[in-house]
Figure (cartoon, rainbow, N blue to C red):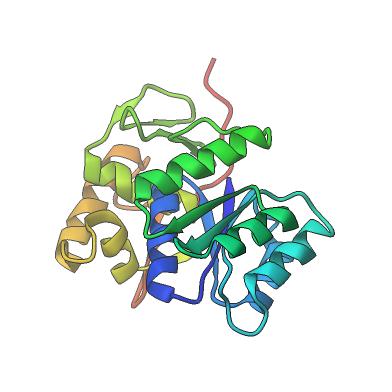
Amino acid sequence: MKALVVDDDRVLADLIAFTLRREGFNVSLAYNGESALQLWRDTQPDIIVLDLNLPQVDGFTVCRQIRAEEETPIIMLTVRSEEDDIVRGLELGADDYIAKPFSPRQLVARVQAVLRRAGKTAVPGIFQAGPLTLDSGRREVQVNKGKPISLTPLETRLLRYLMTNAGHVLTTDAIITQVWGADGGDRDMLRQLVRRLRRKIEPDAANPVYIETVPGLGYGFAPPAAEPPVE
């Protein structure tokens, strides 16, 4: 599932993106209305989380232009006291709204409810990339549909983040934040975690094919095509 998060408050936008990525969404971020419309056309997201109070091209305009072309589900972000904005946004075609401040659990519940109403379903916690299938709820990964391999919570978070961003280089700092949070983890801990995960999923941990080290930047996940299971 793909999500587009639009908010000029970069701290809040990053928090929303972090929350959705932990649920398995591939998230794109926009900080103004113009870039939101461009990203919407480029990425064709399954759902949009849209702040109404954007500079220049505001959220109402973004919602109106999207509704003129597509039925992409839209959840508005509003300030609690702005009832007129809520009514106007719903009249323009938004599917739901969340009043600030809100909890991550509320955000996830609203997103899932809107997607269900729109007929968009996904198996929660199941991630597929190349020959790897990760069940984050059970903390198990399968390689080429083989025997499930048990993972620790940290290994699960790391692999989930890498798989949902397959084909992209992720910086060391970004990975640490995703796995441990802003105040935990360091580069040595990440190296050790990558080493342990490679031992579990790589055909040869000394010559990894799934988790690649990108010198000076971080890591990337670029799995080969899935191989047919052995009969």
